[in-house]
Image (cartoon, rainbow, N blue to C red; front, side, top):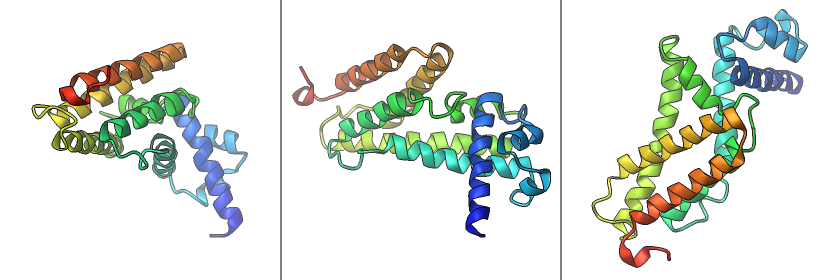
Length: 204
């Protein structure tokens, strides 16, 4: 594909991603995408065969954006609990609080809309959430095995709790645009993890 073709494809994906985040997948029409990009139908269908194909590309792009924001500086942290907290802070402050998508968290919005509508598309969203939960669980398990967290800590349960807290904060922030909601969630998650630490590792 030529450089111009790649640029046009990127324009379609970026514009559609914002539209899907605001209007939802099913309420976004091809006409909306044409208006947002300034393309003709021929120009659009020269790059994508259907709106669903556009969504697939938009989903992949949204994952790239999210990963770049959430995992910034994370690999440099040796303490697995602090690694978790950096990812949480990046997610809440810089991804959700950074208003990356006009309609709020793309993944949460799609998770609400797609089940019962498109099993395949909903599965992609759910698989992404599970992958993040599994990563958090691996860090929690690392902290448990190294004696930072108590031996009785259930890594999967804690990971799911963290993910649920992040999603809850995302919903409340989308409705209010009040940053203290995000900061309070960060604070509460840190307190929760601190309560799970072995006595020798608890901060004072």
